[in-house]
Length: 307
Image (cartoon, rainbow, N blue to C red):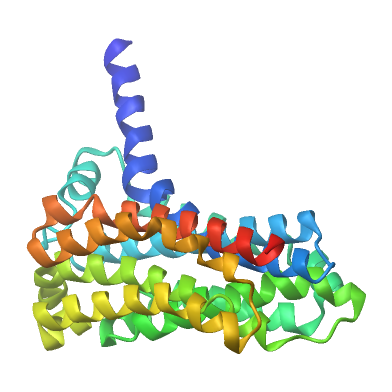
């Protein structure tokens, strides 16, 4: 009985830490939603439940993409020791490819379940946002597309988390009020997009040798370690610089610069990226930057809503 209990606990830890990965996926999905809610609050159209339900849907679709990515890795590249814990789990029966495929399909189905209600509120823009989001999550490593293989994940993630996430969140709240969309609805999330892509760049740096074996042409594989580090630095500069530009250009209150309170933590991640390129050193940096992005979004949103 004890052995069975230990096995169950190990399996639970496997799903939480290595597959569901809430310290990564949850803050990443939440960050653009937080900004969209702040914009709605500022404009007097705030509606919690549509925004929250949209967040849950987008997070589940994101999780489905993570499950699918790991499924494709274990099915197509089992000989590559990128995630030895998952390979060992498949070998000893704690994880099966069928279960992982079912989990991915279930996450996608649960993610799109609230779509009819959200579409009733937001109309066709929500339809297109949902379709694009689902395709982007599936297409990261899915059969027949796998745009990450061609080094296109960075611009796709920048648009998804920097534009679409904030826009869709704002629109589903504002649509019943027939408020015209402002330029801010499309641009306010760009700092978030920059930080989210930074998370992806850290993964690309630490996994570049495995990606090369898989035939993936990520920027770190194509252009090398120094390029990837410079890209990461530029993304942080963009993320922290845009709020300052938005004060005169979009009329945002100076209080949005509260987001700069997270800068010391960003500096510690930047220093780690420039000093290390191995998996053990960089693995903690991915969830750390994801959580930093959520904290940045919360402070930025606070200044936007109440400044």
